[in-house]
Image (cartoon, rainbow, N blue to C red; front, side, top):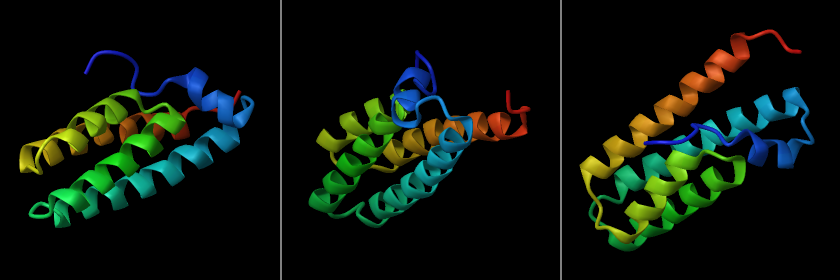
Length: 109
């Protein structure tokens, strides 16, 4: 997807620019997002459960500024469950995970 992986301005709005808190929130988000994806995977035959999990993923993603994941989750919240949708969400979440890993490796200013 086009655009930033993480909207840093949105993330900073929750952390007042505290880098340690940003990292903590991003790690918590990754754990939570993985749970929502697992729920979606288990709901492949349950459209209502799929929508609930996609909606929750959309909200969590939007809150911390994971823009592409939020957009996809919003789209898939309206679509029927599919393995292709899960794959796309997993791919975008992998991008977030890579960014978080890179930030963890970078020295704190």
